[in-house]
Image (tube, rainbow, N blue to C red; front, side, top):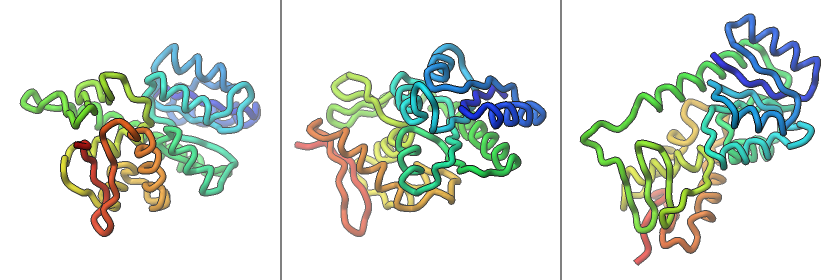
Length: 230
C-alpha cells in the first residue's frame, strides 16, 4: 500500500514512517504543505495521512486545493486539534476520516486499511452497461463513469462528502431522504462523527447550488429533497 505521510514534527514523522513501514506500508514522508501538494499532483497514492499544522500551506489548504484539482485519494487527517469544529472543518474540506493526537498505531492502521478498502469497493462498483451513464436534474449533471458533477456543463468543485450527498439525492429524484439515511451515505461506518455533521455538508452544498436552478430543500419531518426549479 502506497502511503503519503505529511507531518511537520520531524521526530513523529520518522517514528510513524518507521512504524508504518514495518506494518507493510510503503511510506513517502514529507514535512510541509507545499511539498505535499506537489507530491499529490505528481503520483498516485492509496491513502494520505495529513497533519493540519504545516509550514508553507496549512493542512486544510492542502486538502482543499488537492480536492479542487481532482485528487480523490482517501485522506485521514491526523492532528492535535481535537475540537468538534476542527473535525467538521477537516471533513468539510474533503477529509475521509479524522484521528486526533495522541493515537494508537493499531487504530491508525485499521482506519487506513478501512479507507483503502472502501475506496476500492467504490471503484469496483462501476455502473453496469444497462445503467445510464448520465444523470441530469435541470442544469445539474452527474457522470457516473467519471464521478464528476457539472453545472451548466462546468465541473463543480465539491468535496467528497458533498459528492456523496449529491449522489444519494440524485439516486432518488423527487423523493425526500431522511437525515439518518444521508448520514450513512456521507459518513459510512464512521460512528465517531457527530450526527449533526451531515447538516454542515448540506449547508455547504446548498450554498454551492444557490442561483443555479437546482434547490436543496429541507422538508420538516421528512428530510432533504433535491429539485429543479420551474
